[in-house]
Image 1 (tube, rainbow, N blue to C red):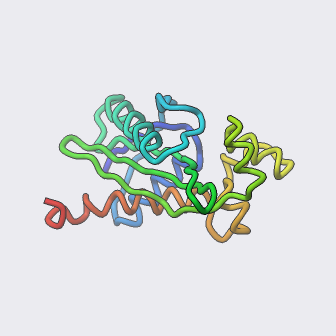
Image 2: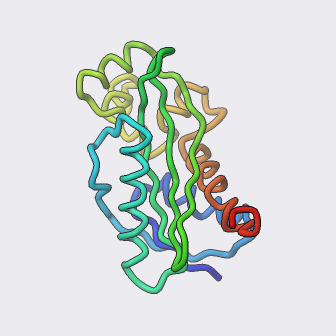
Length: 173
């Protein structure tokens, strides 16, 4: 059984971590820790989000005798075609690190404009939907895909992509 430490107490990130390892046919025991990312509350670049995920993973791994530290960080990025939402997963074991990214979902202009003005996506989505805790449930991804893909599933997929290197080290040497 693998022991993994997740650098977040968000239930979406915890479930995504457990599911990703289970899809890789690993039995896991999951611990959670409230670990700050060390980056802005709303990362606006892949580089910043990966840096935050790495900090969470490193700090989570150091919390005890764990096989993996897990860091997950969402971000938005402005491109020529609009603002896109994505997520990054970074895993750390005693020897290596493993990085995976999620898909990219274009945000509506009204949401993107608010983020460009310094707001964070989570509270904006709460106001947009008239509900609280959207980022602890389906997330913006779930809202805009009508539940076809949830925030948990997006993070789970990013983690599976990160696990590719762990599952096939001979391809990455």
